[in-house]
View 1 (cartoon, rainbow over the protein chains, first blue to last red):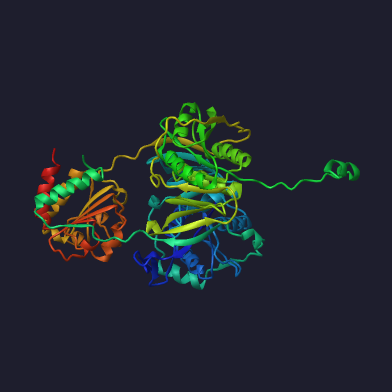
View 2 (view 1 turned 45 degrees about the vertical axis):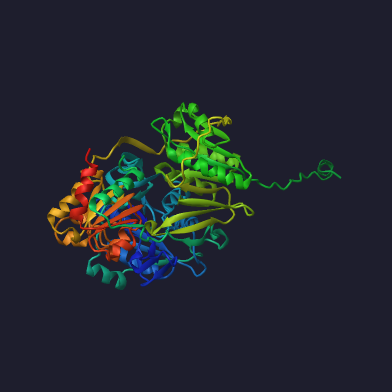
Length: 260
Length: 348
C-alpha cells in the first residue's frame, strides 16, 4: 500500500513577532519548520505503515532549503522523499502549488491514499487537499480525526462535522485531510536524523521533469498587503471600591451578552 | 459585404470573437435543520454592498429538497433572485452531487463573484469548485472590498491562526470565489417588502454518484470542559490571587459566568491548574469574547496567547502591572476583595 503525504515548510511563528502598532512583522529568527498540521498527516501515514506495512512517500515544493523538511520527514519514518524545485518558481499561490503537486503525484504513479494537513498555518487556506483531489479525480474526506479501519480497499474514518463528528466510508484511492487533533506526531529519533542526511536520498524534480511550462504556473491570487489587528491599550481603569467595580463589570457582562 | 455572403463565397464559417462576460454576485446559502444558516444571510448583506459598487445583481443559490419556502427569506435579506435546485438526490449534502449542480450552474451563468460560508460544507465545496472552474479562491475571509475600476475583489483573511492578516486579491480569472467566516459580517436588515424571482435550476446528475458513504452523524459527548481554545468566556488566575483559596474564587467566577477556568505559568507552578489550562505561548492560545485575568501580572508569554480576546478585564492589586496596559477594563484591587462582591451580584 502506498501513501503519499505532501508537506509544506513554513516560517516558524516562534521566530517572529507581530508588532501591532508599527504594523510590521519582525522576524527575529528565520527558522523553518514543517507545517504542524502536515505532521499530523505524516503521523497518520506512519501509523498505516506500522499497522499495514504501507510505504510512505513525502513530497514538498519550494526552495532548496525545503530539503531539510523532507529529511525530517524521512527521519520520522517516511520511506521516500521528493523535492519539487525550480529556479523559475518564485512564489507560488495555492492553485499553482496544487498543480505542481498533482503532476508530481501523477509521475510517482502508483498510490492508494493521499494524506494532507487540513490547512497551512502561514496562509490558513485549506485549499491544497481539495484542489489536489479534484485534479486527480479522487474522492475526498476532510477534517479526519481518526482512521477507524481499512478493509479490502474500503476506508472507514471519523471526521469533524458540524460541531460533532461523522463516521464515513470511502473506497481507495482517496484523499484525506487530517485534523490537527487527530494525533500527536512522533519525534524522529537520533539515528533517524543522522541517516536522513547521510544515507537516504531525496529525489529532486524540476519543472522539466514534471513537464510543466512557466505559463501553466501563472498565479491566480496575489498578496496585496499585510494587515494587523488593532493595538491593545488600556480602556478604563477602575480604582473605586470592589462593590463599585462589581457594578461596572455587571454592565460589561450585559453588553457582551454574557449575563442579563 | 456581410458575413453570410462571405461564407457563401468561401465555404468558410467565420466565427465571431465571443467575449465572455462575467457578472453578478452569487451567494451559496446553506440550510441546517430546515432553517437558513446565518452566514448565508450575512453574506447577502455584504453582497448588496459589493453589488452597488459594481452595478450588479445579487443571486442566492439554494440546493436541497422542499426548500422553496425559504426563497422569500433570501430575497428579504438582499437577494435579487434565488436559484433553487430542488431534488430528492440533493436532500442530503454530498460533494459529488452538489459540486456537479453548482459547476453546471456557474459555467452557464458565469458569475463575477461567488461567496460561500467558510463552513464544513463551504470549505470542502469551494476549493473543489475553484479547481474545477480553473479559478482563484480566497478562504476564511473576514472582510471583502471591490476595486470598482478593475472589478477586482480583495479579501482580508487571517494567517498564523489570526496573529495578523493578509489582504489578497485576484489576478484576473473569473469567477472570483471567496469563503466567508460566519460572523464576519453583520446580519443585514430583513426587508419584507423586497421581492424577487425564484428560478428553478435543472438538476443533471447522470452518472454522478456520491463517493463517500455516511454511516452516522453524532454530536460530541459533552466534555466537562470544552477545549479552552474554543471557550467564549475564560476566567484565568495567576500568582496574584494569593493562594489556593484565592484561586477557588477564580473557579467560582468561571462557573457563575458559564465560562472556563485557565491560569498563567504562575498558577501552573503553584499547582492550581493542569497544563491544559495554561494560557501562554507554551500553553494554549485563546480567543474568547471575555477574558478576566485575576492576579496575572501579564508578561509577553501570556499576552500573545490571549491578545485576540474581544474584551479583557484585568484584576490586580498592583496598578503598575503590565497587564493594565492591554486591558479594556482594569480593576486595581486584590482579586480576593474584588471577586466576592461580583459573585454576589451574579447570583440569582
